[in-house]
Image (cartoon, rainbow, N blue to C red; front, side, top):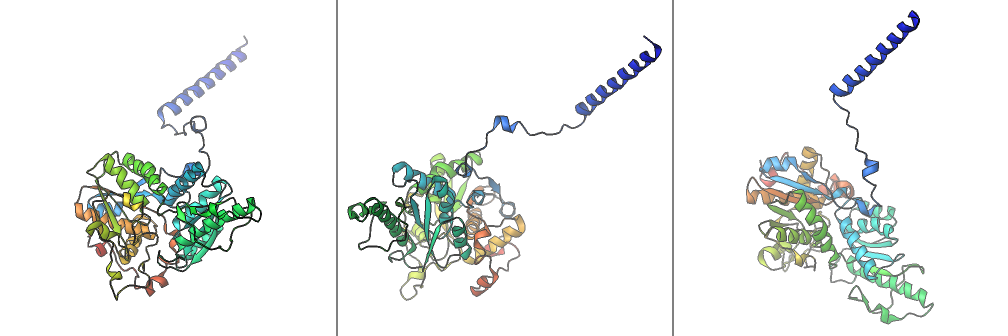
Amino acid sequence: MAPGNMESTVALVAVVSISVLSYYILYTFQPKRRFPKQLSRTKKPKSGLISAIGNTPLIRINSLSEATGCEILGKAEFLNPGGSVKDRVAVKIIEEALDSGELVQGGVVTEGSAGSTAISLATVAPAYGCKCHVVIPDDVAMEKSQILEALGATVERVRPVSIAHKDHYVNVARRRAVEAKESEIRQRSVNRIDFKDLELVNSHPAEEGKQVPVFPSYCKGGFFADQFENLANFRAHYEGTGPEIWEQTNEHLDAFVAAAGTGGTIAGISRYLKEKDPDTKCFLIDPPGSGLFNKVTRGVMYTREEAEGRRLKNPFDTITEGVGINRLTKNFMLAKLDGAFRGTDREAVEMSRFLLKEDGLFIGSSSAINCVGAVRVAQSLGPGHTIVTILCDSGMRHLSKFYDSHYLSQHGLIPSATGLEFLTVG
């Protein structure tokens, strides 16, 4: 081999050797880059919107935990696709109705709701090929009806009245299910309606007399979701939320607390936790105008607002939407509770601003009253306990009331606390 070729070969070998050595040093002694695991090979995408509901994180609420000496944890239900804990209920109600044949694809799900359940139903109904018609009180935050309409639901706003009144939003929603069924029968029978088929809707008697049709001729029947009395509500939390909390706390928590509207959340979770560990304490936090506090603590559904001569025009004169009630529902009657606490509108408003400032948590009114309850439980049990509550929804759907300065000023509820002094903490 010529001397020139020999030198070139030696030089090439030297370059290759240095390159190999550099590669070895670089990838052996320097910190390794963390590439994601082969997600596309080992984990498949979830199927559809419904699969994203549930399994929400349980987060430590740092400010409340540090102030009380307890571990206060919030189940972040506002991270569900529809933005609230009611997504679970909507799925359970619709799936059970489809399984039983009471609802079919193309049918209309009707519901009377203060907002969150309606939004959840409107969110998930299209995934099952169904439509949604909701009836809400006309004093509910305006953005809730705007969200519902954007989701494609038919929205009917009615004035707030007693549940005994035929035009209470729940009773109107029940009638709408009858009308949807009438529409289906009218389509099948052309111009002949067999009223025997209209005697019951979800075990509720239909009203006498012909209703004004509000559904198109192509409607494939109606189903009244009936979140207050439908035990699918309870089962959604007994089978889902409760087990998740138990697992996320490593099967150790001292107490659970939440407010009740339909009663499904507190009933399903409390019963599951009590079955797992009877020593787990479960409590209600009750807002103004609701009779559940007295029912739990004294066995009687009664509030001072309903005393003779003092009855309010609307006993639920509170800004904590979606919780508080003056009757016992089938769902609530399944709850296993150790006691109850009162919470006020002012405490809820102050708590929401405190958590926003200290933790960056932007929560709705029912979430805020639940956090008030968590602090009350911590005060009752003392430091060193683990307490779980529900962060039902975010503040996004409470802008026109709960987070509106003008509205709060009219009700004397402008927040002024600098800490947790409104709960005599710190």
